[in-house]
Image 1 (cartoon, rainbow, N blue to C red):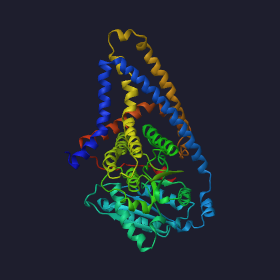
Image 2: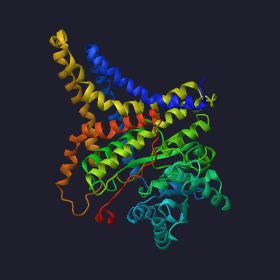
Image 3: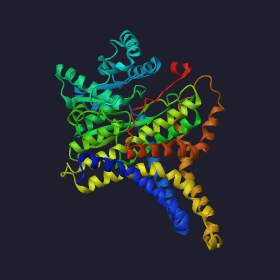
Image 4: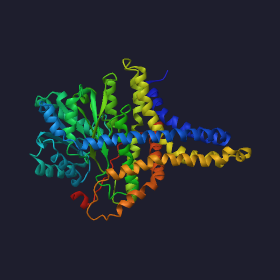
Amino acid sequence: MLSDYQRYRWYEILPGLSIWLTIAIAIVCSFIRPLWMIYVVITFDIYWVLRVIYFSLYLVISWCRFRRAMHINWFERLTTEFPTWTKRVNVIFLPLYNEEREVVASTLEALRRSSYPAERLVVVISGEERRRAHWKDLQQWLQTTYRGVFADLILYTHPADLPDEIPGKGSNIHFAEQRFKSYADAHGWHYEDIIISVFDVDTVVHPEYFAHLTYMYCRHPRPERSSFQPVTLYNNNLWESPAVLRIMAFGTSFWMLFSLARLDNLVTFSSHSMSFKAALEAGGHTKDIVSEDSRIFFQCWLHYGGDYEVTPLYIPVSMDTVRDEQMISSLKNLYFQQRRWAWGTENIPYLLWEFRKHPEIAWWKKLSVLFHEWEGKWSWALVPIIITVFGRLPLWVARGALRQTALFFNTPYTLEALVQLAMIGLLVSLIMSMLILPSRPVGYRPHRYLYMIAQWVLLPVSLLFFSSLPCLDAVTHLMMGNYLGFNVSAKKRTAERSAT
């Protein structure tokens, strides 16, 4: 009979085990059954080409919705269609660690410029006691510069070394939520009327974001049963970032656009909004894990018996790439950021553990949620490896009569043809990247646009070393019980970019 600890550890092992078993079986079959492996690789590549076409179709659909939403005056719609909109309270949580003043200023200036009245926004900035000197300096600057701009500017200090916490965004937000609960109670606010937006501190909102969010919240028949997910663009410092960082930033944005159109496996990611009532009833953003942004969705989904969803917002929020002053540091930051995101694999054992506590949720719903989480991490870790390595390995090690068959001679041409078909996705991505590219900053010559096109030749390398390997690293750490803490991504901007 397994103890609870042993059972949960077994659940943590399973995702990594499934990935490493796939790798082991592929290698063994390439040597002892290369013919089988050739058929498997061709079948998989055909499947993946269909997935790429499917992805491209939904990406275009989402892009059309995105462009249409960007041209709507959402504040006018809000005030016209919902006269009682003023009873809603928008609260923005901004956890802060060691970010520069320029990064915080760009975020607050975007809130000030919002079409939704800044004097109706409550801004909660929660600094870390671990960075007391830096936070104290920022507090003085914030109080001097932004006091009176918003409905209220609340500054909390998250204490260090609280019990049952790991240092990071989740514990910071959890602390701020509990403190803000007392603030809301003192003002007599109803939790279901409070819309909280949990942002990274470098999140620059579109001017229509809060008008659109409040409109969708008022329009939703049960807004306390939904999170609200915007389009995430990593383009604040895109022009000065290295090519590999730009490619991965575009990839994340395209994945989000694709997910918003599909809806069936949409989970909150990074910056998101939701009802304060739902957040409190689900226990708040978790303080002892890394992937609190996706976990809060699963907490709510389980708490409400599977009756919880994510509503897409086709209005963007912009954030920074993980750029640092040195190229090597930037690439290390990118690797660790991707590994931190892949650490969302910890949601799989969490779901397996919690499912038995919720018999009210239909088994097919549980299976669907679990499959999307598991298959997503499996594909994240393995697809680049399967396409770039396992597609050729059986041909390299084939022996004897197999090397004389028509299949052996034709397989390279078949794989090449499939790769060319998959270039449809690359072409769509290239076009989309130019469409969402921010305006060229002062001092950058027009020929830099050519770099933005040429950079896509780095896509295979980027996917292998800065997508697949970080994910494999994360699932292996979880499988071995070597738990990752929350690494803070360094984000730098040039002086010219910060000024603009």
